[in-house]
Image (cartoon, rainbow over all chains, first blue to last red; front, side, top):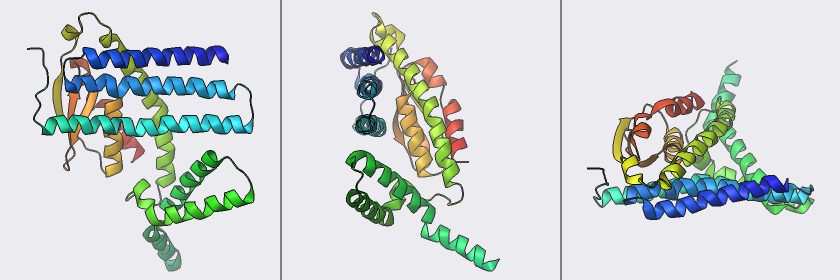
Length: 103
Length: 174
């Protein structure tokens, strides 16, 4: 169990790092929203599952409740993160920002 | 017979199904977050969940038919694993792009508009959020006439729209 949660935590950190690097490397606001909105969600999902598994490794009712609470964080982020991304993209569109293209 | 039809009508009118579902969701959240199983805390949960489901059931389940609500919820939970798999694929693709040395030659950002045939606010909301979470696409705007404006990071992800995701969501609300 410890090994699985270690691998999940490490994978999640890779996604988080990718998100941060992506925000710097991509050329404009719209394409920067891709790593900001997606890689963070995946990183959070993996790190939180890793933590929930670690908590569950010594089984009890209170451990189960803690794990469920941790997974609730993931549920709320899955709802709010795309919404926030959408709001930022919409704000850019309303301000008349032209998106970066290869030409 | 008439009495039965009338009570079915009344059930739909009073949104009993939606209220019961809201109560269930609220109470499950209450139990998980409180973590105490004595009578006092459980009763407190019943009272506050009841108040919330009386006053604001239309926030969680806006304008849905009473009869097919349980089936809809079941299908939604079946949709989630598929969505998670798609999210995982999307993230691997994006991670690859992020660390690609000549990333600007790989991407080809473009704005795509298309007309959705989904019905109902909830379906459109789930579709918009799913688009944002999956391969190379971010929803920018959804108009009242169900016209989607989507920013796609490269050509393949732009061509994949609206695709199978819309069919799946249509199936949930069918």
